[in-house]
Image (cartoon, rainbow, N blue to C red; front, top):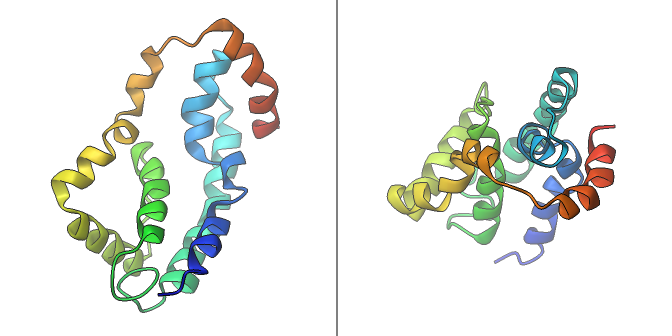
Length: 150
């Protein structure tokens, strides 16, 4: 088992938190009481094409799972990140057949019911819009969020 893979997998998402669509579509509106610009969302989605292609070509290659023949923590971390994109309606599977097959294998390995339960909050992110954020926390978060969409 390649234990050095997890840090490499984490570098796949490092830096993406700044541009992650769920930040611009969910987190930003919760704390800023406004939505991020359509231009920023489009820029984010275009940027994401690069790491998604890398996930398929560099990390997945021709293996059933990211690390090899068995599901590993790296698969679970990566699929959770991708579920955020699926939740906001971004088609991450367009022209990426290996990614589709991998996603289906991960779901099957976890079990479809458990997989859906684990991602219930992510898939129902619209429910977060009803969440009340304490004013003090909103004020603390505003500078960070403004940096994310600047």
